[in-house]
Image (tube, rainbow, N blue to C red; front, top):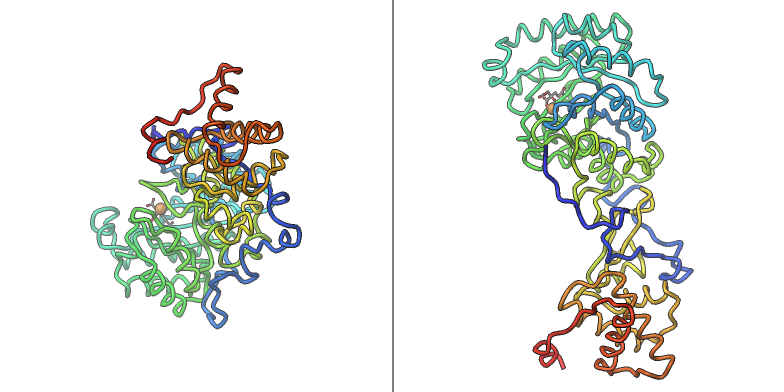
Length: 469
Ligand code: HCA
Ligand code: CU
């Protein structure tokens, strides 16, 4: 089991000291409609780039194949069905399933998922380049078959022991057979980036000529970088007519960038898994790819995928494989839309696009500003006072902020602590018990408040107070 930290959470995946930012109260009305997180065509679109497919690409979702190869994964049929339905609701183009030749249960699961009649996603299964596997696969009811065989010298010598002549002959046989059944067929070369380029291009060219629907490029060991990916896919684009699918492992942290580079170079399909689960540390994560592609072309992504489903799909898979969604996950990580430093908070409250490339609302997520810390600023505190309906002048807010910062130098202040400071400050001003610039009076009032409730306030050590006073 993979251990994972459980962040202090308020049940909504959000730490207690965060406030949801209600832009209705924080942003003046004429700015409210102008919160642009991207341009129609994205920030980086190059209008003259005829190769790029960053505005026209498909997802081959492999949680139920590559993801089943994750160390913690063991899916029963019920779980697979839940995941398949959730991925279909999200709108992935294809769902790839473990080979029916792997085990009797795998075959039964594949047949059952094909019978679900999913709305949007086509069903693929993933097999070795072998007629025995192909015969089983076409009987399951799948819409297509993804065939793979290792082409690098490592795999040819130490895995299956076949040469390129055998691989090419068998690939053609399998492709013609699967095509004869009227379903889609893809041919992929495992470990493409450590394969001989001439071998690769010639086998891709051969299978293209016999009518494969897609060729696949697989960075099986996660060794490729975006530039290598761009160059290989661009070269391949000039050699084959069929679609190009790409599969990137994340061993060296390039899986999302490589997927993007592949699309820029003319790839058409990207393999993903939910949370990136797969062999070792996995492949391009679905959420991470979506985040990246939202920047390239938000309209395309929003028109195709039901983005508010992302969190649900991730939670489902995280639970099934007994891991936590990582704290720094793309889009759904607990701090993905939390702003902390005073300078950031101020700008976010004026216009979120200042420090956000993605709009949390597109994913059904909320934006938070963290205020109970020593880096806080009075603009963020003001927005909280407004949320609490406390009518305070800017000078009063600044004065209360100084107290929050002083106390936060001792320990982080929870949302509740901040609210108490603001409420006590506000009512003391109204009752004439406090004036701006009387930090000791405020300390006494806070102590009294806590005493009356039997709670304990943060106390500033004397040494610290002398230094700051
Ligand atoms: C694996 C196979 C594979 C296949 C990718 C593909 C890989 O190692 O289990 O079919 O394109 O990474 O090479 O997942
Ligand atoms: Cu893989």
